[in-house]
Image (cartoon, rainbow, N blue to C red):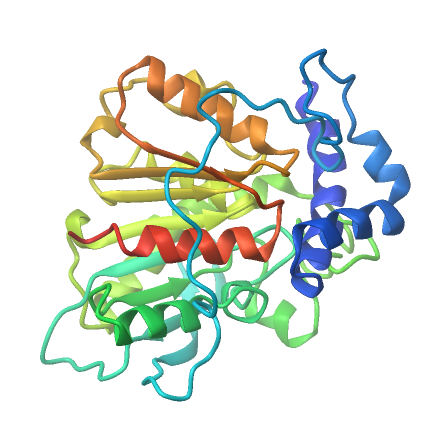
Length: 348
Protein backbone atom coordinates (compact mmCIF):
# COMPACT_ATOMS: atom_id res chain seq x y z
CA UNK A 1 0.00 0.00 0.00
CA UNK A 2 1.80 3.11 -1.26
CA UNK A 3 -0.87 5.64 -0.37
CA UNK A 4 0.10 6.10 3.29
CA UNK A 5 3.48 7.83 2.72
CA UNK A 6 1.84 10.15 0.21
CA UNK A 7 -0.90 11.04 2.67
CA UNK A 8 1.70 11.81 5.38
CA UNK A 9 3.57 14.14 3.04
CA UNK A 10 0.34 15.68 1.79
CA UNK A 11 -0.87 16.28 5.35
CA UNK A 12 2.30 18.14 6.33
CA UNK A 13 2.26 20.26 3.17
CA UNK A 14 -1.43 21.05 3.44
CA UNK A 15 -1.20 22.18 7.07
CA UNK A 16 1.53 24.69 6.15
CA UNK A 17 -0.46 25.90 3.15
CA UNK A 18 -3.65 26.29 5.15
CA UNK A 19 -1.90 28.39 7.77
CA UNK A 20 -0.47 30.62 5.06
CA UNK A 21 -3.82 30.89 3.28
CA UNK A 22 -5.42 32.16 6.47
CA UNK A 23 -2.89 34.96 6.90
CA UNK A 24 -1.99 35.75 3.29
CA UNK A 25 -5.05 36.39 1.17
CA UNK A 26 -3.52 36.56 -2.31
CA UNK A 27 -2.49 33.59 -4.41
CA UNK A 28 1.00 34.90 -5.16
CA UNK A 29 1.77 35.69 -1.53
CA UNK A 30 0.54 32.29 -0.37
CA UNK A 31 2.69 30.50 -2.89
CA UNK A 32 5.88 32.45 -2.17
CA UNK A 33 5.27 32.07 1.56
CA UNK A 34 5.10 28.32 1.23
CA UNK A 35 8.44 28.30 -0.57
CA UNK A 36 10.02 30.32 2.25
CA UNK A 37 8.50 28.47 5.20
CA UNK A 38 8.80 24.90 3.98
CA UNK A 39 11.29 24.64 1.10
CA UNK A 40 11.96 20.96 1.71
CA UNK A 41 8.27 20.07 1.67
CA UNK A 42 7.72 22.30 -1.35
CA UNK A 43 10.47 20.54 -3.27
CA UNK A 44 9.28 17.10 -2.16
CA UNK A 45 5.83 17.76 -3.57
CA UNK A 46 7.22 18.33 -7.07
CA UNK A 47 6.69 15.61 -9.67
CA UNK A 48 8.78 15.56 -12.84
CA UNK A 49 7.29 18.30 -14.99
CA UNK A 50 5.38 17.04 -18.03
CA UNK A 51 6.47 18.51 -21.39
CA UNK A 52 3.26 20.56 -21.69
CA UNK A 53 3.45 21.97 -18.16
CA UNK A 54 2.42 25.63 -18.07
CA UNK A 55 5.42 27.87 -17.59
CA UNK A 56 5.99 28.99 -14.02
CA UNK A 57 3.36 26.70 -12.56
CA UNK A 58 3.71 23.81 -10.13
CA UNK A 59 4.89 23.70 -6.53
CA UNK A 60 2.42 22.90 -3.78
CA UNK A 61 0.81 19.60 -4.73
CA UNK A 62 2.91 19.13 -7.86
CA UNK A 63 3.12 20.54 -11.39
CA UNK A 64 0.02 21.90 -13.08
CA UNK A 65 -1.08 20.99 -16.58
CA UNK A 66 -4.21 22.76 -17.79
CA UNK A 67 -6.55 21.38 -20.40
CA UNK A 68 -9.16 22.97 -22.67
CA UNK A 69 -11.92 22.45 -20.10
CA UNK A 70 -9.98 24.15 -17.31
CA UNK A 71 -11.49 27.63 -17.44
CA UNK A 72 -13.95 29.74 -15.44
CA UNK A 73 -17.62 28.83 -15.71
CA UNK A 74 -18.64 32.13 -14.07
CA UNK A 75 -17.12 35.59 -13.48
CA UNK A 76 -15.46 36.35 -10.15
CA UNK A 77 -17.67 37.80 -7.40
CA UNK A 78 -17.87 41.60 -7.07
CA UNK A 79 -15.51 43.49 -4.78
CA UNK A 80 -16.55 43.46 -1.13
CA UNK A 81 -18.80 40.42 -1.44
CA UNK A 82 -17.22 38.77 1.61
CA UNK A 83 -16.69 41.80 3.87
CA UNK A 84 -18.80 42.44 6.93
CA UNK A 85 -21.25 45.22 6.17
CA UNK A 86 -22.86 47.30 8.89
CA UNK A 87 -25.82 48.18 6.68
CA UNK A 88 -27.17 44.61 6.47
CA UNK A 89 -28.64 42.27 9.10
CA UNK A 90 -26.30 39.60 10.45
CA UNK A 91 -27.14 36.00 11.17
CA UNK A 92 -26.33 34.19 14.38
CA UNK A 93 -23.30 31.93 14.80
CA UNK A 94 -23.43 29.45 17.67
CA UNK A 95 -21.03 26.72 18.88
CA UNK A 96 -23.04 23.56 19.46
CA UNK A 97 -21.88 20.55 21.45
CA UNK A 98 -23.39 17.13 20.82
CA UNK A 99 -22.86 13.51 21.72
CA UNK A 100 -21.74 11.39 18.78
CA UNK A 101 -23.14 7.92 19.29
CA UNK A 102 -21.28 6.56 16.28
CA UNK A 103 -17.94 7.75 17.71
CA UNK A 104 -18.72 7.51 21.40
CA UNK A 105 -17.39 11.02 22.04
CA UNK A 106 -18.54 14.55 22.84
CA UNK A 107 -18.02 16.82 19.84
CA UNK A 108 -18.55 20.37 18.60
CA UNK A 109 -19.88 22.03 15.47
CA UNK A 110 -21.03 25.55 14.66
CA UNK A 111 -24.41 26.59 13.33
CA UNK A 112 -25.29 29.75 11.42
CA UNK A 113 -28.93 30.84 11.54
CA UNK A 114 -30.05 33.55 9.10
CA UNK A 115 -31.27 36.97 10.26
CA UNK A 116 -34.85 36.72 11.48
CA UNK A 117 -34.60 32.96 12.07
CA UNK A 118 -37.88 31.66 13.45
CA UNK A 119 -39.42 28.31 14.26
CA UNK A 120 -42.55 29.42 12.41
CA UNK A 121 -41.00 28.33 9.12
CA UNK A 122 -38.52 25.75 7.85
CA UNK A 123 -35.14 26.37 6.25
CA UNK A 124 -32.86 24.45 3.89
CA UNK A 125 -29.45 23.45 5.26
CA UNK A 126 -25.97 23.77 3.78
CA UNK A 127 -23.27 21.69 5.49
CA UNK A 128 -19.79 23.19 4.98
CA UNK A 129 -16.66 21.12 5.67
CA UNK A 130 -13.25 22.64 6.50
CA UNK A 131 -9.66 21.78 5.58
CA UNK A 132 -7.10 19.65 7.39
CA UNK A 133 -5.46 22.53 9.27
CA UNK A 134 -8.73 23.94 10.57
CA UNK A 135 -11.63 23.20 12.85
CA UNK A 136 -15.33 24.05 12.81
CA UNK A 137 -14.27 27.73 12.91
CA UNK A 138 -12.32 27.80 9.62
CA UNK A 139 -15.22 28.73 7.36
CA UNK A 140 -16.02 31.81 9.45
CA UNK A 141 -12.63 32.86 10.86
CA UNK A 142 -10.20 32.15 8.00
CA UNK A 143 -12.87 32.34 5.32
CA UNK A 144 -15.93 34.60 5.58
CA UNK A 145 -18.90 32.29 5.08
CA UNK A 146 -21.26 34.19 7.37
CA UNK A 147 -20.43 37.52 5.69
CA UNK A 148 -20.95 36.00 2.24
CA UNK A 149 -24.36 34.63 3.18
CA UNK A 150 -25.43 37.77 5.10
CA UNK A 151 -24.65 39.93 2.07
CA UNK A 152 -26.34 37.64 -0.44
CA UNK A 153 -29.45 37.49 1.73
CA UNK A 154 -29.56 41.27 2.01
CA UNK A 155 -29.32 41.53 -1.78
CA UNK A 156 -32.12 38.99 -2.26
CA UNK A 157 -29.88 36.64 -4.25
CA UNK A 158 -30.45 33.56 -2.10
CA UNK A 159 -33.17 32.28 0.17
CA UNK A 160 -32.63 32.12 3.95
CA UNK A 161 -30.75 28.99 4.93
CA UNK A 162 -29.08 27.40 7.93
CA UNK A 163 -25.34 26.68 7.64
CA UNK A 164 -23.71 23.92 9.65
CA UNK A 165 -19.94 23.74 10.15
CA UNK A 166 -19.02 20.27 11.46
CA UNK A 167 -15.58 19.26 12.68
CA UNK A 168 -14.23 17.07 9.89
CA UNK A 169 -11.64 15.39 12.13
CA UNK A 170 -13.69 12.69 13.83
CA UNK A 171 -10.92 12.06 16.39
CA UNK A 172 -11.21 15.58 17.83
CA UNK A 173 -13.40 16.13 20.86
CA UNK A 174 -14.66 19.07 22.89
CA UNK A 175 -12.00 18.22 25.49
CA UNK A 176 -9.28 18.47 22.81
CA UNK A 177 -10.54 21.89 21.78
CA UNK A 178 -10.79 23.09 25.39
CA UNK A 179 -7.19 22.02 25.95
CA UNK A 180 -6.08 23.99 22.91
CA UNK A 181 -5.30 20.85 20.93
CA UNK A 182 -6.24 19.67 17.48
CA UNK A 183 -6.97 16.03 18.19
CA UNK A 184 -5.43 12.92 16.67
CA UNK A 185 -5.07 13.01 12.93
CA UNK A 186 -5.18 16.79 12.75
CA UNK A 187 -1.88 17.45 11.09
CA UNK A 188 1.88 17.64 11.24
CA UNK A 189 3.86 17.43 14.51
CA UNK A 190 4.66 20.82 15.95
CA UNK A 191 2.60 22.73 13.42
CA UNK A 192 -0.78 24.41 13.59
CA UNK A 193 -2.42 21.04 13.07
CA UNK A 194 -0.36 19.14 15.64
CA UNK A 195 -2.50 16.56 17.37
CA UNK A 196 -2.91 16.41 21.13
CA UNK A 197 -5.98 14.24 21.45
CA UNK A 198 -6.56 10.53 21.08
CA UNK A 199 -3.75 8.69 19.38
CA UNK A 200 -0.93 10.90 20.65
CA UNK A 201 0.55 14.23 19.66
CA UNK A 202 1.24 14.67 16.01
CA UNK A 203 -0.20 11.37 14.84
CA UNK A 204 -1.37 11.75 11.26
CA UNK A 205 -4.48 9.57 11.48
CA UNK A 206 -6.00 10.01 8.04
CA UNK A 207 -8.70 7.46 8.84
CA UNK A 208 -10.31 9.97 11.20
CA UNK A 209 -11.30 12.05 8.17
CA UNK A 210 -12.84 9.18 6.23
CA UNK A 211 -15.48 6.59 7.26
CA UNK A 212 -15.70 7.61 10.96
CA UNK A 213 -16.51 11.19 9.98
CA UNK A 214 -19.00 10.01 7.36
CA UNK A 215 -20.79 8.04 10.07
CA UNK A 216 -20.73 11.01 12.42
CA UNK A 217 -22.19 13.28 9.75
CA UNK A 218 -24.92 10.93 8.54
CA UNK A 219 -25.86 9.27 11.82
CA UNK A 220 -25.29 12.02 14.41
CA UNK A 221 -24.82 15.54 13.03
CA UNK A 222 -27.66 15.59 10.51
CA UNK A 223 -30.18 13.97 12.90
CA UNK A 224 -29.16 16.48 15.60
CA UNK A 225 -29.70 19.45 13.29
CA UNK A 226 -33.00 18.04 12.01
CA UNK A 227 -34.30 17.65 15.56
CA UNK A 228 -32.97 20.88 17.10
CA UNK A 229 -33.52 23.41 14.30
CA UNK A 230 -36.50 24.35 12.17
CA UNK A 231 -35.15 22.83 8.96
CA UNK A 232 -36.39 20.65 6.15
CA UNK A 233 -35.23 17.06 6.46
CA UNK A 234 -35.46 15.98 2.81
CA UNK A 235 -32.66 15.76 0.25
CA UNK A 236 -33.98 18.60 -1.88
CA UNK A 237 -33.34 21.04 0.97
CA UNK A 238 -29.94 19.69 2.03
CA UNK A 239 -26.57 20.57 0.46
CA UNK A 240 -22.99 19.50 1.21
CA UNK A 241 -19.82 21.39 0.25
CA UNK A 242 -16.26 21.67 1.49
CA UNK A 243 -12.80 23.12 0.93
CA UNK A 244 -9.60 21.14 0.44
CA UNK A 245 -9.76 18.12 2.78
CA UNK A 246 -13.44 18.97 3.28
CA UNK A 247 -13.85 19.05 -0.49
CA UNK A 248 -12.56 15.49 -0.66
CA UNK A 249 -14.89 14.46 2.15
CA UNK A 250 -17.77 16.14 0.32
CA UNK A 251 -17.16 14.18 -2.88
CA UNK A 252 -16.61 10.91 -1.00
CA UNK A 253 -19.92 11.29 0.81
CA UNK A 254 -22.12 13.44 -1.37
CA UNK A 255 -21.66 11.72 -4.73
CA UNK A 256 -22.85 8.38 -3.34
CA UNK A 257 -25.64 9.60 -1.04
CA UNK A 258 -28.20 11.26 -3.32
CA UNK A 259 -30.88 10.12 -0.89
CA UNK A 260 -29.38 12.51 1.69
CA UNK A 261 -28.08 15.44 -0.40
CA UNK A 262 -29.30 16.91 -3.68
CA UNK A 263 -26.56 19.56 -4.00
CA UNK A 264 -22.82 18.77 -3.72
CA UNK A 265 -19.79 21.07 -4.06
CA UNK A 266 -16.08 20.23 -3.88
CA UNK A 267 -13.76 23.26 -3.71
CA UNK A 268 -10.02 22.55 -4.22
CA UNK A 269 -10.64 18.94 -3.27
CA UNK A 270 -7.63 17.22 -1.70
CA UNK A 271 -6.16 13.71 -2.17
CA UNK A 272 -8.48 12.27 0.47
CA UNK A 273 -10.88 12.13 -2.49
CA UNK A 274 -11.18 8.43 -3.31
CA UNK A 275 -8.98 7.47 -6.25
CA UNK A 276 -9.34 6.54 -9.02
CA UNK A 277 -12.64 8.29 -9.78
CA UNK A 278 -14.19 4.93 -10.66
CA UNK A 279 -13.68 3.99 -6.99
CA UNK A 280 -15.22 7.28 -5.92
CA UNK A 281 -18.26 6.77 -8.17
CA UNK A 282 -18.51 3.06 -9.07
CA UNK A 283 -21.95 3.53 -10.57
CA UNK A 284 -22.31 6.78 -12.56
CA UNK A 285 -26.09 6.41 -12.40
CA UNK A 286 -25.99 7.30 -8.70
CA UNK A 287 -24.66 10.90 -8.94
CA UNK A 288 -27.01 11.51 -11.87
CA UNK A 289 -29.73 11.69 -9.21
CA UNK A 290 -28.16 14.87 -7.78
CA UNK A 291 -29.54 18.27 -8.74
CA UNK A 292 -26.11 19.93 -8.77
CA UNK A 293 -22.52 18.71 -8.71
CA UNK A 294 -20.06 21.59 -8.42
CA UNK A 295 -16.33 21.00 -8.92
CA UNK A 296 -13.95 23.92 -8.61
CA UNK A 297 -10.25 24.60 -8.27
CA UNK A 298 -7.84 27.45 -8.91
CA UNK A 299 -5.45 27.16 -11.85
CA UNK A 300 -2.52 27.94 -9.54
CA UNK A 301 -3.34 25.02 -7.21
CA UNK A 302 -1.06 21.99 -7.51
CA UNK A 303 -3.91 19.80 -6.27
CA UNK A 304 -5.98 20.59 -9.37
CA UNK A 305 -5.24 17.12 -10.74
CA UNK A 306 -7.60 15.62 -8.16
CA UNK A 307 -10.54 17.67 -9.40
CA UNK A 308 -9.50 17.32 -13.04
CA UNK A 309 -9.69 13.55 -12.72
CA UNK A 310 -13.18 13.67 -11.18
CA UNK A 311 -14.35 16.14 -13.83
CA UNK A 312 -12.98 13.90 -16.60
CA UNK A 313 -14.67 10.81 -15.22
CA UNK A 314 -18.04 12.53 -14.79
CA UNK A 315 -17.79 14.00 -18.28
CA UNK A 316 -16.95 10.62 -19.81
CA UNK A 317 -19.99 9.10 -18.11
CA UNK A 318 -22.38 11.92 -19.03
CA UNK A 319 -22.92 13.02 -15.43
CA UNK A 320 -24.02 16.65 -15.51
CA UNK A 321 -21.86 18.96 -13.39
CA UNK A 322 -20.26 22.40 -13.14
CA UNK A 323 -16.49 22.57 -13.66
CA UNK A 324 -15.19 25.97 -12.58
CA UNK A 325 -11.46 26.78 -12.80
CA UNK A 326 -10.50 30.35 -11.90
CA UNK A 327 -7.18 32.12 -11.35
CA UNK A 328 -6.66 31.42 -7.65
CA UNK A 329 -4.41 29.07 -5.68
CA UNK A 330 -5.16 26.87 -2.65
CA UNK A 331 -6.41 29.80 -0.59
CA UNK A 332 -9.31 31.49 1.13
CA UNK A 333 -10.09 33.65 -1.89
CA UNK A 334 -10.87 30.50 -3.85
CA UNK A 335 -13.14 29.15 -1.14
CA UNK A 336 -15.05 32.37 -0.48
CA UNK A 337 -15.54 32.87 -4.22
CA UNK A 338 -16.97 29.41 -4.68
CA UNK A 339 -19.28 29.69 -1.71
CA UNK A 340 -20.63 32.90 -3.24
CA UNK A 341 -21.27 31.19 -6.58
CA UNK A 342 -22.43 27.81 -5.28
CA UNK A 343 -24.88 29.16 -2.70
CA UNK A 344 -26.79 31.05 -5.42
CA UNK A 345 -27.42 27.85 -7.36
CA UNK A 346 -28.76 25.57 -4.66
CA UNK A 347 -32.24 25.04 -3.25
CA UNK A 348 -33.88 26.10 -6.50
